[in-house]
Image 1: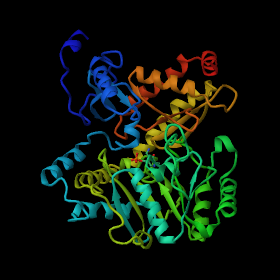
Image 2: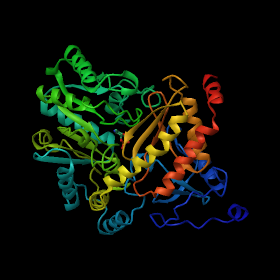
Image 3: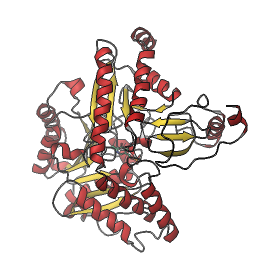
Length: 464
Ligand code: PMP
């Protein structure tokens, strides 16, 4: 400790060789992180928040190491991005090689092979065995915006339907598509017009089966908008920021069938669920739903900024030449990273690893849930799991306990994220490169967080 206070710790290289351990050598934040966070407060706009009070210097496998030498268990993957593992050696090598070759030409000026290769890979691995095409972008929000542009151009219609609890990004159109006001939308209107919101299937709270929940949506669309005016329905197959809400079986297939029958483009936003995260390469595959367009991002390129829209060739080809793209869209370094990332998912059969992770999370939390009635629901698939936290003997959301448990975890060296319309969901998005031991240790700390906040005090606290 004394040494750390006076001498800078050697900065370790990230990647899987990083010691895979939870190690706290200071309180959090330690002095160096505290100094960097103080500079952040002075230099970075307040709207750019952060979750865990540490400044990262390295990450890999299942850990993030901070500037003071603390090693935290990573159960967030930088919001579902470093699914193959942070600083994955193949990704890092591909990035370094491409950076030494050329960093940018702009694909719209002089195209290059790696972009074409990523498009070919996406056309191959995404759901649907018809002719597909892809276009690449920089962020999930940009991909979603472009999916809507393409659907509108193709149909000649304007209206778009998104869902309660949905999250699609922070740009103007994606804010309009996003359900939750605070913190995403409040004060930023006016929002893009012709966006309508439909009720999501939320089995824990609505008690409807998939067909009933879909019938409720379809009735609303037909009566309030009219299918003839509707360009697209966009939905996350498992909602991410909204609370890892997994619709009842049959909901997605019924919506997709209705959209197809009515000439409405069915868009799946798999920015968070995509790329092995849910125990299949795409969450659509669990119910064999085939979208017309799929938006992807996050896990696509091992941490490099990249996103995509992939879908039926005749829809993708609707916009005129020059209508899609962007200066950096499909940057060659991101494309090189994506090619080795996608190869890693396939060669290492990471969908199986995601299912193994699911089994461990289920085991730990089913046991905890059996003895703690504040755990209202355990849901999600693969390495995308969550617990919904409620007040005892009710389904009333308990955001105060959720925050206390997340803070307890962070204080004890485990990065966990929260989410949900009611702020009462603890979500688990570990990198698939995490070891079983480290995952179990991280989950144990979260479980301790519940035990430390005993039911009686948790109830009092949340009511204050
Ligand atoms: N769609 C979904 C489902 C997401 O989870 C996110 C990011 N959380 C986005 C879109 C936006 O992606 P980005 O932050 O890369 O713009």
